[in-house]
Image (cartoon, rainbow, N blue to C red; front, side):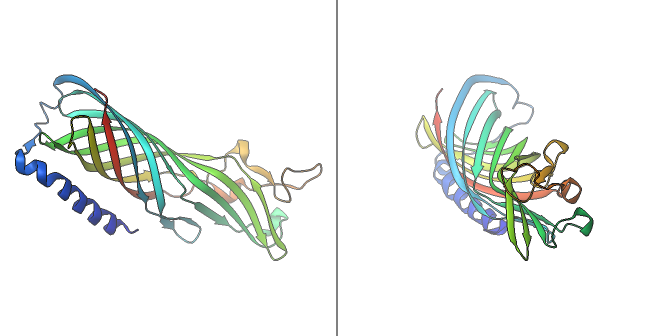
Length: 253
């Protein structure tokens, strides 16, 4: 799904969710200076699901648009500011290709590094911009880590293909989100959230500790050819992915 479609769907859902409560209760714009005043402690547990867009950087790197799901714990003790801890999983695949030069003694072909899933761990602030008795519109910046799992290295050449598993890749990620939380019941609510993630190198990062692999068979037998492929990959460029999620909120206090 493209970014414009994500944004359009989010605006429609957010508008429909907020209309009933806005009609019954006039919205209040939160004063930034009063947002940091103390309020009773609140805590929520949430499960959510949605989709994440893909990204392509040149001809060598690409990620695919896929579904995602996750869990979020939100707590707060200030009038207009909450905090959350998040975990998100997606079966989004990410791939990075390189062509080995002749001096590496490999057959003529292509090296393919691939990650078959994405795990994100991040924390966020949640500033309530406009709120009513039943709805809250918010902005939510945050940061964390993106972990590219189930990775493999494959050599594609005219004689066939050889592959070996490799360690996961981890990258620092920043995100900015916006959305609306609607509470039709006292202890149950819904969240519509759109979020943009900007991440550094991860899928393409070949650290010194895991940069030497046997590309013939796995596990490598004695005498297997070991090739250092670290210089071919290095860190990939900054990548950008957008998520649109719908969550079910349970207020525990």
